[in-house]
Amino acid sequence: MVASPARDRVVAAALDLFAEYGVSGTSLQMIADRMGVTKAAVYHQFQTKDEIVLAVVGPVLERLTRIADAAERERSRSRQLEVALAGVVDLVVEHRRVAAVMQFDPIVGRLVQGDPGHPAFDRIRAIFTGPDPDAEAHVRAAMVSGGLMIAGVDPALSALSDEKLRAQLLAAARRILGRPAGRRRTGD
Amino acid sequence: MVASPARDRVVAAALDLFAEYGVSGTSLQMIADRMGVTKAAVYHQFQTKDEIVLAVVGPVLERLTRIADAAERERSRSRQLEVALAGVVDLVVEHRRVAAVMQFDPIVGRLVQGDPGHPAFDRIRAIFTGPDPDAEAHVRAAMVSGGLMIAGVDPALSALSDEKLRAQLLAAARRILGRPAGRRRTGD
DNA sequence: GTCTATAGGGAGATAGAC
DNA sequence: GTCTATCTCCCTATAGAC
Image (cartoon, rainbow over all chains, first blue to last red):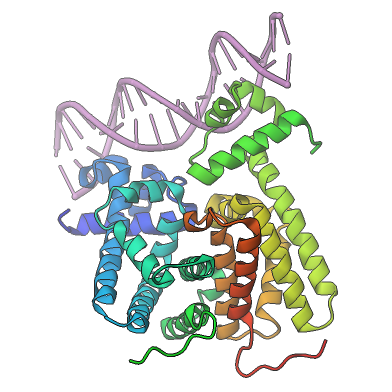
């Protein structure tokens, strides 16, 4: 788990390839080739391919955990939503490719189940749905999650600056989640 | 391209597995095992694995093409949007798993490039964005596409009835796309 | 339509030298 | 930290009998 230049280079190369070919579509040979080294050199840094996947995904999970922590500390529902939304949007914008890679690959999903950061997904989803969610709340939350994740890799959005993307994602997400059925502002 | 019971069984088994393990994560052996036959029996129906993927995805692409056709026949922008949205939502609900499988796997994406139905994606996306799209329109369209696709496989939504899911997806999608910045109803 | 058998290649992973 | 060399396994795909 110690950071080292060589490890970081593996992770960077792996992320590039995962985003382009998917996790299962990326072999250790491809990672090694992109780095200009051999497979064995990669294996010196990571004992298995799964470890590489987790190293790519890990920082994102940690950050999701911190976002969930911060959001849950807020006492009003509207503040919780704002903190969670802003956090996830920032994360998506800064790591445009990572989010989608991990969320939509079933193999990664299974791997991530074992990661200590995994519950963050559900905690943030719970903030998006709110307490006692009905069908409407579930669908809204799912569309926000899915929409934000996909935004990171959508080719039509790749030309947008970080600032523009962030602003529009926030606006779109708020539009989905806000005002369920004649809901009023909740004070703060 | 002729339909036959054996072919259909391959496609059905493949779809199950693609949804669960991803396309690259699914081998012909797994498909054969699920059908209770051998790999060779599968190869008698399809000459390559790619053909199986295209057979799974093909009907969805055809339907997307028909949706795009119908939507483009409408003359008002609001009608175009309604037809496209309703069509895509129906498609997602009826084929809950297929949509996401194809859209989010980079390998499938590359395969689908060669399919005659492929342009339907862009045509429908264009209807979602509208003419002369700005950043806002692109982001809205991307979130609707991504959100709808992901809804088909989201575990939190799997318990919902088709009717409930359809209604809520439509409502959420309209909420994203509707009224950009003080937009009025456009007549018809 | 389904089978057995097998070819040929690339995958993940390991051993040990430098 | 990187290399060469190698192992084992499973993959896609093919051949030919039933």
